[in-house]
Image 1 (cartoon, helix red, strand yellow):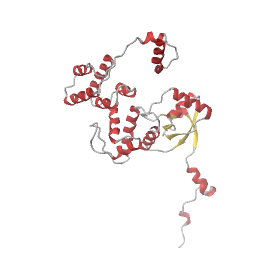
Image 2 (cartoon, rainbow, N blue to C red):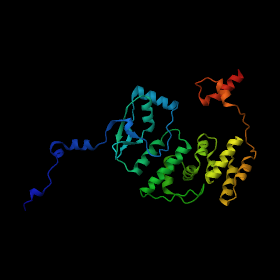
Image 3 (cartoon, helix red, strand yellow):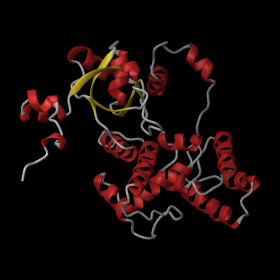
Image 4 (cartoon, rainbow, N blue to C red):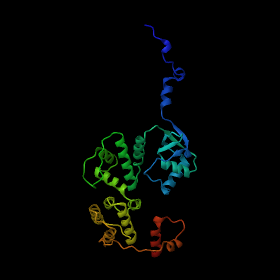
Length: 299
């Protein structure tokens, strides 16, 4: 039987003039330099990029050695790129006055990009509670979209149905299922209270209880924290959560609970910040002010 050659597809030019090895190499990911101005940040990126001493050390390292680990980006429809992994390297490169950054370009779905973004950042030594909270939540949602088992519940601090996806995430990062659930509850806090958690002024357990209060109730708690210069105890937050669920937690009740003297409450001495600042060295870091003042008084 004679084949109809006229209907057979013609070989591509690449097939005629390149070897199999050339074609394989063409499909491999390569590191290319991309203009920093052409790279957009990841939407709702949960990890903070802070200009601090650690960032300055990274900047100095880049000035001396360049960016040793390429960033990972994905192409956008408008011809730009979206950063997946490498926000801190990008910022440090800008501080070092670099115009470009080495990148690996990879086509990723939204959910694939979220999972890679979260996993790459959770490897850092220090992670703020707020960062972990939103990262866990984003990854669980991405896993849900991918069709993986997820029936995540955030209505209780502990207990509930065991969730395979949350358990996997927890094991990957040294947290139990319960701890994953507790961190995700933090995403229900108003930003001002969540910042106090990051500053370690409110512990995780009372923060989780506060997350069940309405926004209005949480702002009332915040006002009391500012007025009393004292954060609520775990026992107080448990009472407020219960009363909130019963519909009996008013602003007056919050003020009454928050005004109670706690056995472990430490008195704080207040100073006018402007007066203190006027006699401090101009370039002193905030975290060193207390030591400076104590040393000055001792002297």
